Length: 133
Image (cartoon, rainbow, N blue to C red):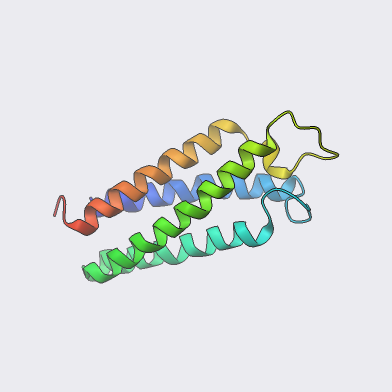
């Protein structure tokens, strides 16, 4: 199950990369409202550190690394949920002078990223508690 979690994590990261590039190309780096650069950077940085810890867990088979990765993954998920809420708010019919970058995210990619993230959290947590060992 540790390998399934790794694959799900990498697939989630690829979806997130697509969204981050889309966000940057649509002015996300300079926008005054919506998802700010610091929030996106924190989401990305914590996710990458967690992924590295998961790889260390797989290499070492030390459950401490698995639990550290799961803890970071939960932090990433919380930041991601706030960004999803901001993104959905950006797609409302509220009149704005300009649409935030996340207001034009491709909704299927957002949904896929969220579904893969949920799968990753589930698989990593189940692995950390010893299911499938």
